[in-house]
Image (cartoon, rainbow, N blue to C red; front, top):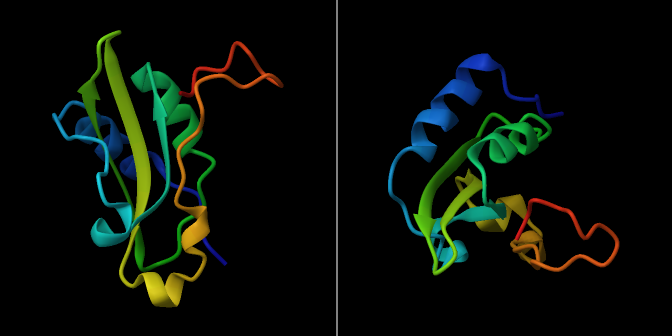
Amino acid sequence: MGEFPGEQTIEALSAELEQQRPLPEDPAQERIVYWHVFRRPEDVLTFARGISLESDEVMVGGHTHDSIGHLYWVGVQVDDLEVWGNRAAIHKVDGYDPENPGSPML
């Protein structure tokens, strides 16, 4: 069973969010799963606290921008996608969520 990130992991992710790093272009190649994009770094950190990590998984993230402004992202990098399993869990969240129109996720 995985563990939720401690303060040290959240602080490391916060530092990563300050680094310019594009959104994963080929998440499978980069072994990044369960990644999400937000407009505000504090939303990334709030979301990240709820991600359960196994011992061979690490949180990764960064920021980039589009025509509207900054984009901050977080994902989980795994050692081996075949062992991890469900590649369908590699996803982005659509900017318009009719169930939650005020959502900070893209």
